Image (tube, rainbow, N blue to C red; front, side, top):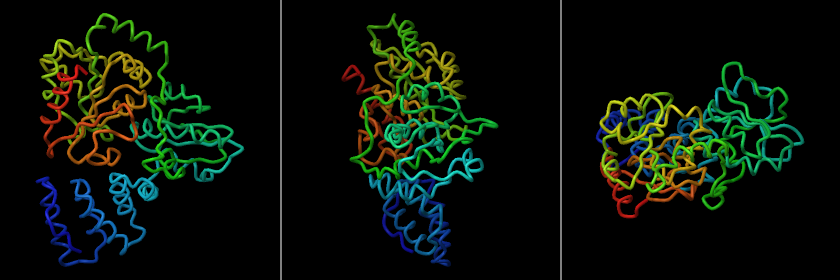
Length: 376
């Protein structure tokens, strides 16, 4: 197995790559080592070499789940969605659905004269991105029930195509009368999604209008300023993700622009960074009034722009059709593809990428310069 040629410059990857190559010198046909090398290269953004590793690992072990999953991410990031989502089916499904759905058949996209249970099997961001597919599902089934993550229920209950929304939690069983089920993130594969056939709408989520009006009243005193919502930290299973999180200090330049009114949409432990910062007097913290994603959506509906790292709020703004600038690491998640400043998933979104690994300064400068140049 050869991976000759220049590797991605992420310095922290070099020791792991060297270790894998050393093992491969003694075990050239070990699929686990080849897959491990592929995973390192994929995380570093060297997709061509990563794909070669995953392909070789699958030649040696065709049922290697991790190699299929790695291959899916590479193909999806390359825009080869039909192939990528087929490989995506090798991922582990949501724990919430595995036990209670053992005796329920999986939906194959055919007409169903009964109840279909759709299980949100990924992160909150995944649910916000893929819930768009339910509009295409509803014509094929009599009743559509969505089992979603806590905090999304009130927002998603406003989707006309969903007959019932159940928030997951301890003891929740939502399939008692279901005739079939499907994981939400399997719908792109069922519908044979390509770049050209991504279901699009300027806005496919709508916040509760009463809450929108309440936020409009709160923001009324700043009508002459551009109202900007900020999210600087992303989380992975409750822990801050340092690769996707932007240090708050890099947004300081925005606070010096008098035509901007800045609001923090950040939640979680990263709020302590704002409270302890001199910026706390110049960025209004909205978190105490954001009880769930319906509240957050209503606030965003009143903003002129959201600036967010790769976090659920970026997806929420895109799903609402609100202008959003998403600030990405150098080697970004598969859904953002490569080399693009737009997103085929969200027409209102602009992508701001790091110029080099770990270079948040350049990405933040692009945001500041764009706002100063265009007025938002």
